Image 1 (tube, rainbow, N blue to C red):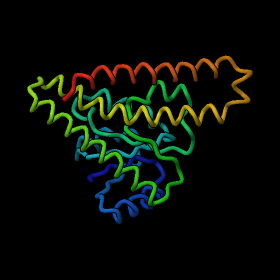
Image 2 (image 1 turned 90 degrees about the vertical axis):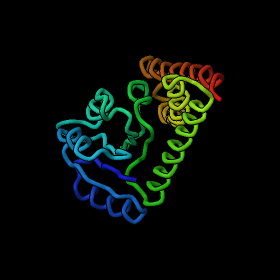
Image 3 (image 1 turned 180 degrees about the vertical axis):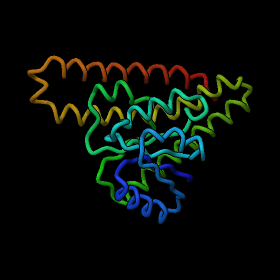
Image 4 (image 1 turned 120 degrees about the horizontal axis):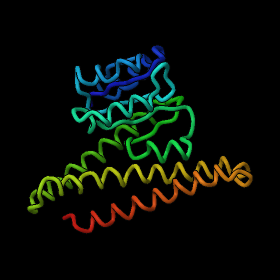
Length: 204
């Protein structure tokens, strides 16, 4: 795959670039979040690996820029971070990403995540092709395609919720705000699963 790695730690970028190259992926590096959108437009990648903890422009801000730009909004994004997503982050950004990798990265782990995302993208395009072949209009076929991708990320969010509950169990018992955010995340996941189920019922 053609991969763009966006991370303000140049040494780590070079390390990850080497790992990815050995896995057969051509990887470019961008170490300034404020230049990320320009780098994406200059040479459109198949996949973006995006670090969250960057300054002065955070990875979340870069993600919002990507998703709000029609020319690049459909590019898959895997976020890189050294911490588990909070419930608030998961609710706000969870459906805008395709994957999540914890730092520090192991070569096999990173390559597996990329392979898994590649498989999901291939499956989603197969679904789109089947829908078109069955006579569905492109916009409906696209809903079938996107439902496959969304189902994958919801599985990740459900696993993230379980981690959050385990990490925050004692603290959450005495903190209504934490409990509320976890409940909100749980309700969001359940609601999105219901939407996907309704869409997939009508897909070939």
